[in-house]
Image: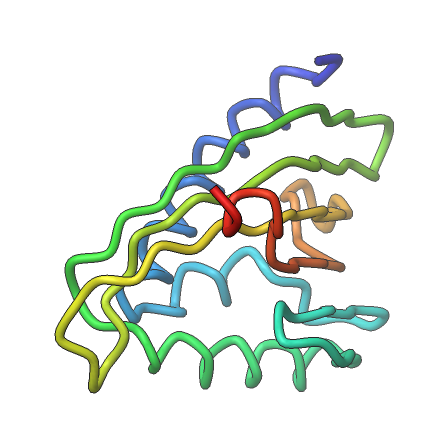
Length: 138
């Protein structure tokens, strides 16, 4: 992995943001999401969401489906930072508590995220996440 130290440190924060999200808290994700266009999100259920404010609202709604007690890990296969752009791609594994369900649910997603440096901070400008079929078949 060829990541500059700043982006490597940011990825640790990104892991904490993911942990908060699977426990129903979208606040930290809103803090690292761009508030300037362009921005996009290709969610696990298909479709596409565009526009910084809209993507933030979609993420906030999505987080409300999770209850406390979730766990997630980001398995970064590769990533790079160059100038004001960076990305990582890999897998997100989680065991989540969905509101209205008594049993925890395991999920495995294929993820690509793209970031832009804005005023010295990394901000997410794109996330693509879909189900890892291989893991579901095990």
